[in-house]
Length: 156
Image (cartoon, rainbow, N blue to C red; front, side, top):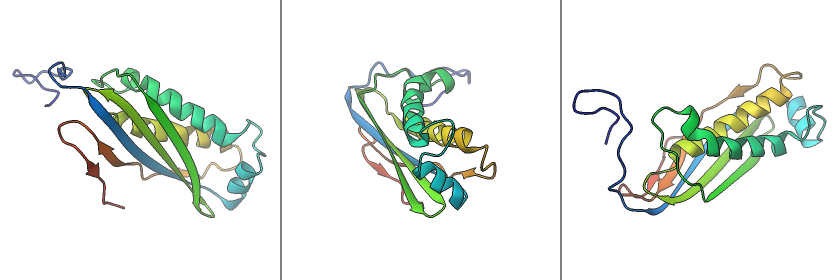
């Protein structure tokens, strides 16, 4: 399947002949920041509010809006979204999102969009104290369901 028709014109892939299956995807990204930024987040000292709560909400909202911002992405029902945050070093926050649906197409783009928007929300909320934050790498960790089955990303 691809996004080009027989005349090499862009189109949305027709998934109407595919069968429903449970589909899930996990994506992650990282935000690197100053130690003082980490402490401000942990101590809820950011003037715009609770950073991780707002970022979680933004990530969930992004899942629901993915088809509106990614060209040719199908609008699909979402059955579950989980977003987790973990400081893996003193200056690096890992964001992980798992998205699930029962449908004819996967949720990889939704999971990737979720962690990206959550990271951008953290940047927006903390930029007044740390404009040097960096985001990435962003990657699909794994996906399951559909004809292609399970995929686990072994790249670090």
